[in-house]
View 1 (cartoon, rainbow, N blue to C red):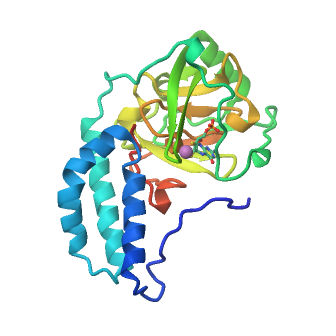
View 2 (cartoon, helix red, strand yellow; view 1 turned 45 degrees about the horizontal axis):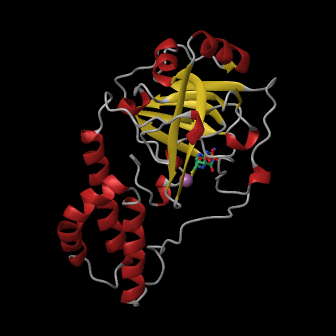
Length: 272
Ligand SMILES: Nc1nc2c(c(=O)[nH]1)N[C@H]1C(S)=C(S)[C@@H](COP(=O)(O)O)O[C@H]1N2
Ligand SMILES: [Mo]
């Protein structure tokens, strides 16, 4: 798999860069990534402008590792604040059919032609970790489970790369699926491994939010290949990169699992 996109990070193990301006530019970019959405931006302009800059001024400007670790500290603190503010009874806005964005934008860390091709006859959803019933699921069994308890939503997907779009996803409420497989819902994290080597993880309260959907359809038909076939997690309370497509494995754990973009500096909680 070729990497078409990756974040420009100053390697902390490289010879120290003495260009203070470049470090400040990098710091601003990192902060911008953490404050990409409006409510967090409003929140952070009140706090980060004073506290965050005070934190940064403790770092010498020729010390990339110091600046990076201060910003990672802000991001971890931001995770805790978002987790504390998160409420399962606060719903993301929903929209009408006429507001759906057509065509829906595609995004991945590669081009659309490289989206994985998955043979549904061979497909098995793997389950591991703190789950009582870990037998893999065939796609038809998941479809049957979703058919008897169908959930649907028209919600907005917000990507930190600067676009948002409204779409309609159908499937089963993820909390119903987690309870069906006997997941330990007191555990901290649910992790996802995808067929294209993407991976991410979410906090358990978000996994159990009533709008978090294990989605099998898009706009009333089978989820198209490039939009995540055979299934994706649709989380309208989180940014786009927290919505894994082409899920092939789900695990429940108390050990922080990280994520593809999160491990490169994106904020882990990633709420919107
Ligand atoms: N498997 C996989 N899931 C992924 C990604 C990816 O590259 N691979 N990209 C994420 C990002 S950054 C976005 S914005 C959305 C894009 O979903 P879409 O193609 O349905 O618009 O998928 C998310 N989930
Ligand atoms: Mo994204």
